[in-house]
Length: 102
Image 1: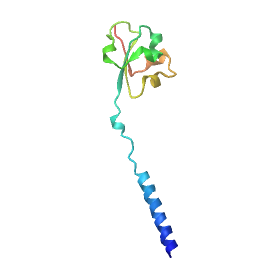
Image 2: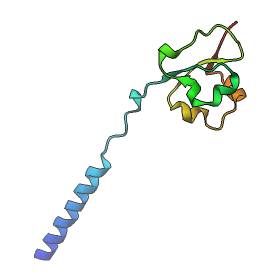
Image 3: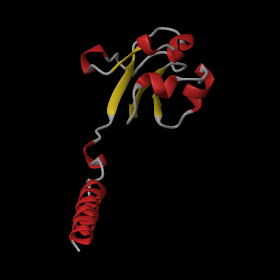
Image 4: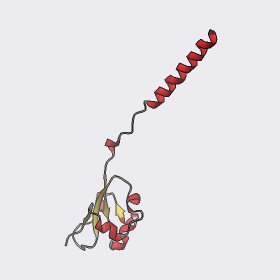
C-alpha cells in the first residue's frame, strides 16, 4: 500500500512540473518596434552594404537629389538580414523602400 501511495505522489509531482513548464507565456511580439534605416551611401551599388545604412536620424540625408538612390526603409529586422542576398536592383524595386525625388 505504501508503494502505491509513493508512486501516486511521484506521478502527481511529475505532472505538476510538466504543467508548470507548459504554461509559459508566448513572447510578446507587440513590443517589436520598426526601425527606420536611412541610406547614407552615394552610389546605388552601396545599397547592399549594411554600412551604407544608418538607423540614426541625424545620419539621414535629404531625400532630394539623385532619383536612382534609396532614401529609407522601415524594418522589423536587422538591416543585415534585410539586405542579405539582395541586389541593388531588388532593393530599389522594393515598394517599402522610399526613393529620392528630383
